Length: 390
Image: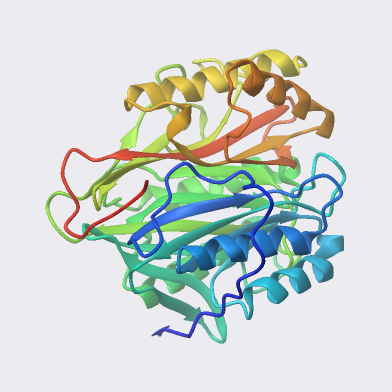
């Protein structure tokens, strides 16, 4: 069942200065989708982060499509209290990632997918809101988050199967199918102990699907606990074109082989061309040689350098640059490794890249850094409905 509950967004006092946020935002009163990324400043409590987010959402008269919360599960009560105080009752999907702050804070950051000027419908499984559905003039989209298995007594592989069953159930409630999915995020507890089993189950399930795009979804797979204590949690993005112009398609990596070549079932990137905009969704990317082996084992500086070169090449292949990035998440095996990423960004005058840095485990023991990101640029064809991302 799809419902449309009233939003509860409480405006807070404007911040002294804007925190990291995406580069393409709709003007107040304009229609369009966007992402806001907020990270705590020095010694700042979670409450201040969510107040700043609430103020920005209210200024754009926006509805939240979904939240990605990166923080310590031990600080769950403090973070959830801060979120409710600033945003009101949760009426959107929330994906919680145990991605600790690289500076010791309880909250590493939050990313809000949001929409101004259009109707947003909610997807429920039972009493819980797990998804948001909206249209952009060219396609119908569904953002789902915080989904996992029903039974925690099952082993990891069985929980993966059950998680996919719940994902399909939610998609069906929204009028979509698993074959419509173009982007996934998987967060696996103790990922290094069973990532091979996870890939085996995922690949077997995907093998029988005829994807609407003809390609596997873009994806991220990170080691992170979830609030339910499940072996795995998932967030996903599905899309169905409304006319012949809108489409989503696979984008390859000029510097890396396709992930299925070494047994991982995802595309390096997907591009959505709809509603007057091209949105590039780049999968979790790390320091991997063209043949699939880990590059620069033990050298974090060179792993960061190569990873960022690989992503830059994907952006360039779509006539985009780092200035077009709207959202990014960086995963560091050790919090101290963030200094190498900061130095890379500073050298290229990218200090304000909208990135949430987290202390997380990547899917290989010898990978020390991974980054995922989205970018956007104007489409070659105009939107059917005005879409202002200035």
